[in-house]
Length: 557
Image (tube, rainbow, N blue to C red; front, side, top):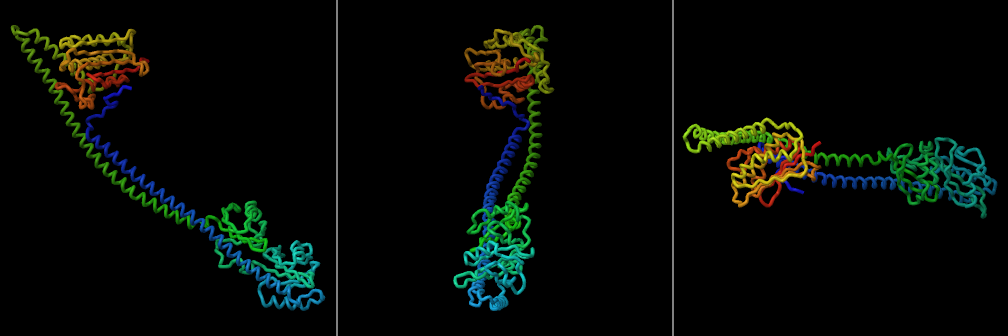
C-alpha cells in the first residue's frame, strides 16, 4: 500500500501550538481519570470481595447459631423427657402398683401423691389396664372417653415392655400433648400401663434460654406432622415443609425453604429416643437483614470514599480545562492575527515584485529606441499574466470551491494543459514527458479548476528542477485508470529533482507555507482543496529521488 506523507486532513496552523496543547491536556485528563478509575475499581473490587466473603461468613455463622440454639433446646427437651421417663418408671416399679390384687386404692394414693409433689406431668397421670381401658386418671379427667387397645403406641408398649414418648391429638385444639407411657410388669407379665400427660403449651420446656421474638419454635414428628404449636402454621401441609423431613437428620441440619411464600431459614434438631424433632424457623430477611444492612452500609461508605476524590478531580480538571480554553482561544486569536499578517506580507511582497517587474518593463517598452524593447514587452506580458493567475488563485482559495462538473475526456484535456507549459520547461532544459492510456479516459470535473491543479503540479516541478544540478532533468506526467480505487482516474506528476525535505513535507499542503524562497504557498493548498471538492485526493508519494504527486478522482457515475 502506498504511504502518504501528506496528512489526510491537514490541521489548520491557525490553531498551531494551542491545538497541540489542548490535545495534550485532554490526553493528560483522560490518563489521570483512567488511572484513578482503574485504581478505584481495583480497590472497590477488593472491598466488594472482602465484604462479600464477610457477608457469606456471617450469614453462615448466623445459620450455625440458629442450629446451635435448636440443638440446645432439643438437648433440654431430651433431658426433660428423661426426667419424665425416670419419674414414671419409678412409679411403675413401686410395689404399691399391683393391678393383680384388684384393689386400685394404693395405686391411686401413690399416683395422686406423686402428682401433688411434682410438676412433671402438668395434665395428670392415669392407669390403664391391659385391655386398654382407663382404670383411673387424676387429678382430673384429661383422657378421651375411649378404649386405647387399638392405639399403635399402646400395642408397642405392651410388646416392647419399654417406655414410650408419644405425641397425640388432644381433645382440645388449644393443647399440644405428649404421653409418656411405661408398662407395669409383675411376675414377668404386663399387668397394665402407667401414663403421664404433658401439655407443652403451658410450660417453658420449649423456650429454654429465652426464645427470640422472631424465632418460631415447632415440634414435629419425623414425618413432618406438627405437634407444637397447637394451631399448626399455614405451611404445615405444604410439600416444601414435608420435604424438609424426608432426609436423614440424625445430627441436625439447617436449610432454607419457601414456606407459605416466605423465604425461611429452618434449623432442625432430632430428639433422642423419640420420633420427634425440634425446629426453629426464622424468616431469612429477619435473620440476615442486620448483617446485610451492615455490609451495604460499609459498601456505601467505600463508594462514597471513592466518589469524593473523583468528584474533586473532575471539578479541578474542569476548572483547569476552562482556564486552558480561555488561554487557547487567546492564543488562537493571536496566532490567527499573526498568520493574517504573514499572509498579507507574502501577498504584498508577491504583488510588489510583479509591480516592480511591470514598472521596469513598461519604462523600457515606452522608450522607442531602447535596446531590448521586445524582450521587455514579453516580460511585461509574463508578469501581468503571472499576477492575474496569482490573483485568480487567491480569490478562488478565499471564496471557497464549488466545482461546475462536466464530462471531460482527460486524454485530450491533459495534453492541452501541459502543452502550455512545454515552452517554459524547454527554456530551462527540462524534458516534459506525457504518458496517456490507449483508450479515452473520461471524468466529471470542472475544467478550469482541474487546469489549476495540473498547472500547479507541473510548474512546481519545473521550478524545482530549474534550481537543481541534474544533467538530464525530466518531468513525467502519467494518466491512467486507477484500478485500486474502483476504476477511478489517477494522474501522476513526477520529477527527478532534489525532492522535498522532511521539514517541508509536514506543512506541504497548508496555506502560506512554501518551500520556495519566492513562493506564497497557496498553490498546493488550493490544489488539494480542488481535489477534495471533486471527491478525490492529492497526495505526495514516497520516492527515492525527486517528488511524486498523485491526483486521484472518483469514477464517472
